[in-house]
Length: 63
Length: 398
Image (cartoon, rainbow over all chains, first blue to last red; front, side, top):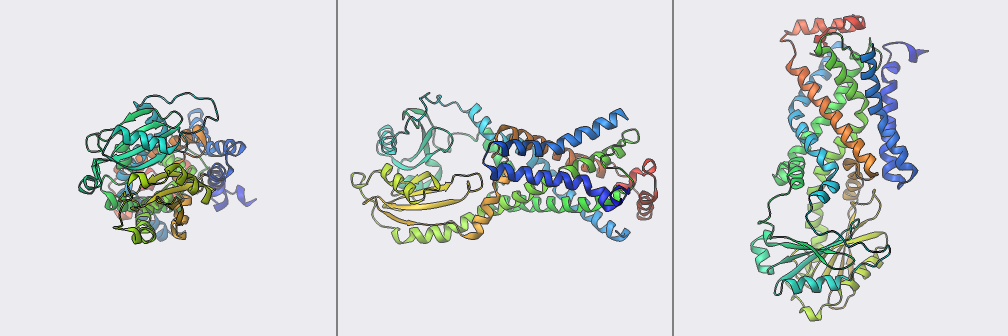
């Protein structure tokens, strides 16, 4: 599967693309959703990049 | 990507970043308290507290507020009122006289009323007597460096360079990551390599947010002059026929509350916020000029001025924003992060801190570069393509 080949465009950009889509979703769901569950979804989606940063830095410490 | 195109993109990333970094750091640092401007503003506010009233208590009539303001400062002119949309307050702005206002814009002072009881919560010195508040300092440094339009256009240009740095940074991210798994941080080697990896990681996972906030930052800086242009054209065209006409005596003026209700009825999807009273240089000699704004986060920066004849109470005209201004204004809330409760504000602040780390690490990578000649740089770059992850040279970021 090409996505697994290290150095391929898909492999390099898979995670950044997922996170960028989550950010766009989070920004719009808070703006257009009008509160309630849409706010909650927005908070979860926009926390994902921060969570990924923490996981990567932690993984470095463990390694 | 060919080596020469990589070098071009890298050159673009380096120089767009270098030019804007100092200003972007200032913008990020001052932006941090601005995310919480409502909370900080309330904390630093030394007004009397709002009266606690049962839910559903009606808001006091604007006629009562106008009467109280005029009683407190007999002989002065009531210039405008502002009715807040999320706090129970009505602020009345006064001037000693229209002539005094024409001579000195800073002769304006204000009285803050409780919107339910009409009690005075605070009144200000004239504007030139009170110093700038903490938040005004932050906003000034964030928006225009206290230099008005020139400052807005300058910081707008810095924001444009920042967006270019983000795009070029994303382009050169690919080649750097060819031999590495996503999120690798090589902490066991040189500090420079560790910070290169952190710069890449922090930058790429937040790029969706930084692109949106950067782009809406440019839009914000453009919307002020465009809003001014609209006021100088369409709004002025609405007001021009009245200019120089006599101001009706106070006893001949109809109820301001009734005018407020008429405007509300004409624009049911909007909230009426501020009213310029007859005679105000920002309004008309014989109209109430009432500004409505959208109720939803998306429309919160769409404004419509309504003219109500203060002699008859009749609606005279409504002006809508032109399309280009509407397009800009609907995207502006995305810059502020204040439309999704406190958790969104906290996330906004954390993402802002991440951006500061990206800017700081970028600056460190530039300052700690080895002073290498061009051929050496080429060799390093070539090595970064060929090397195994463990052997990636630190100088590859050069």
